[in-house]
Image (cartoon, rainbow, N blue to C red; front, side, top):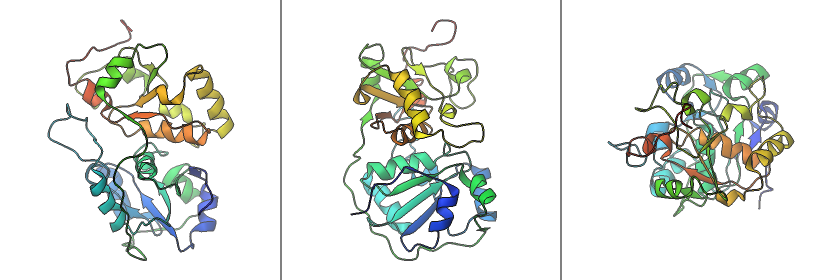
Length: 285
């Protein structure tokens, strides 16, 4: 059995491991600009995963599950196998947004599939390049075929009904990790309606990072979230964002802090705001 590892890996650590046979390197940078960048330049050996087609099961109506619903376990199993990932793989995933693009989402999904040996690259693509990790535009073919089967998501999930029931409960907390301007309803660049779920507290995901774009230390993250949660049990905490992607950045930070991974509300604001639910804004809380 492999030894438990930190959910976050430094670029220098990855450089020292890059020749290991069991390493599978994944670029999870989302969006067309990032896809084009991958085709032109990516970390040596990295395979690309697409948020919309491989890390989500996008449907015609975001009111049913949000903009990035989870794929079925069998769909994700096929993705993992195609990437050459098996139970003994050491997976390292990065993106070009300090883990907030889709790297943390991939990490959460793999952990929820039961795979413990997966890490997110601290600082992402830019930090690795700065540290001297080689880049190229080579097509990557898995060194050996993968085979990964799992039957259900193992990490805790919350749905819209649970959020509605518990959002004002004193023994629970709903955390919105989006930027404050989106939470306050001042600006909404993606979804149809601006605002937040009434009762949710705002702890922006980028507050998990220091001024250089690296994650805060485990001790700093533990102190920050212990104070924010005020003794509420992690199993009574629900974390969401716009569509269940950047929320995983905070779940990663909590795991790094040694705090049990709480529930993820995948539908997030993109689902809530399309279902005739109450809307909170700065002027009315």
